[in-house]
Image (tube, rainbow, N blue to C red):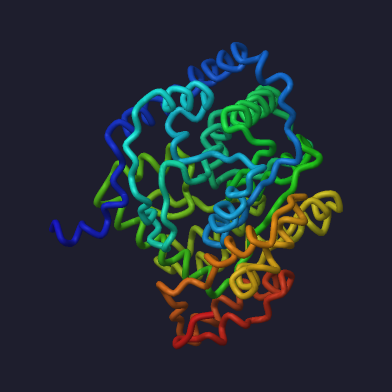
Length: 383
């Protein structure tokens, strides 16, 4: 048993993190009040802090958002959430000041739970703002209702708290601009653009064949890991990660029938069809909103995973230009050196399975420049 469980050590959650995370998640109103108290006490320090052109990386999980986050987070002008910010995400200033005064044991980088070759430490960037979204929008992850927040959405209490939270994070990290990775923000782009008209959006997309393969692999891994370590499931719920695992919940981008078909496929054990339908549903929504909203389209850059891996230098230059960031060639060279196609799994689908993926995704995939090329990799090669 010990040997079998050894491969799932990454799913262990420290007892203090589990306990404090549970305490905070059960009392969101208390922690909102504490966050607002922190803001009032820091008003002299943060009132003059301006939120300038925040950057949002958002797409379906496993499309390359973590690579983009890790890369951009190394830019000296940008500030993001880090692993160390959890559990007390609501009070980033107090928590980080506390950590600065407590002796820290330096741990070497370790591969993250996803087993995707990305090594992390407590200082690594991570997606934690979802904790705040869930506190103010408690129904966001109920797949029976739409997750879309449009440009007409208004939630004044959240908006004030969120702006102040970003200002505090900028203050505590000493940066100039905010960087966010949040896959669920893919249905909130127009709301975010209404809040920050100068925001920049980076939307990763991936060939559906390889994307489905990666999602299936991660879902199986997380289900196994969460069965062995139930605290991991609690943790994923608290931080707002429902992309895969025992509490997987599809994004509802406003098409209830499409979501129902996705869920139906998963419930009858057809993982491949379910993921293909989910891919199509979300990216069809994205394509539709980019077509319908010229301001959103201008603020957004779609980054194809394959382009990023084949030619990271060109992709990074395009991302930097879109985000209005400058960087030396040496900075780009160093970041590009670590970007490559994954080699730890294959899209090992039979012809009939490839046909299923194509049937459910081809029309939307074509809108992002995919024409079935992923299928050509077949059983024997990587992209």
